[in-house]
Amino acid sequence: MAGGRLTVLTDERLDVLRSIVDERITAAADLVGETAFEEFFDQTMCAHLLKVITATQAHEGSVWLLDEARSHLIPRFNSGPNAADFVGSYRLSLREGMISMVVATEQPICENAVFLNERQSKDLDRRLGLLTCAMLAVPFYFGGELRGVISAVQLKPSANSPEPPGFTAENLETLHLGAAVLSRMVDHQLLSLALGRGDVR
Image 1 (cartoon, rainbow, N blue to C red):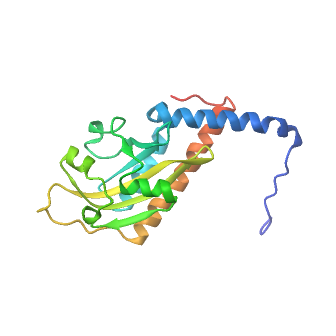
Image 2 (image 1 turned 30 degrees about the vertical axis):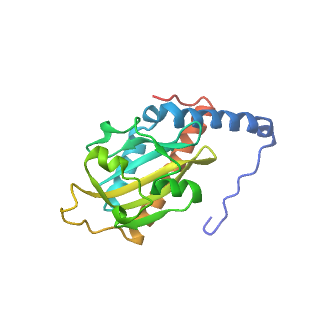
């Protein structure tokens, strides 16, 4: 009926199962965050994130997840050509770096002229031989809590290279919305796993 409200009544038979399902979702989310993200991150999730990164006008983007001790961020996905050089192996302490601020504050950031910001960790840039010029970063939630950060960057090969255009508030909004959709996709898959309706492939 036009203008009607969607009302789904609670089924009391599910009450005894909620805590069990929640425990299984948390356990699966922990596993995804620690070791199984590459397996879990399916083609649909990847395609969505790649389109979002492109829509922000970024050169590349990354998914950073907290380690088990919640003391470091580890890149679990990167869309750029150097992904194999640092994804899964690089560790960023939460005591340094701009994306660590997103974990601490749970607030997104949009920063241009990143290389002039003293907060930025230069370690990864030195490792890859690149200069990060602009950055977007937003919190990434799944399994009921903050699990990491999704970032998008504009880069140049050296200080003498032309400056990229930088990011706008609209670019940040695009990444923020894209991360929220990805969170729902991940949570849906976690629920399916918790209910035995799917396997991590």
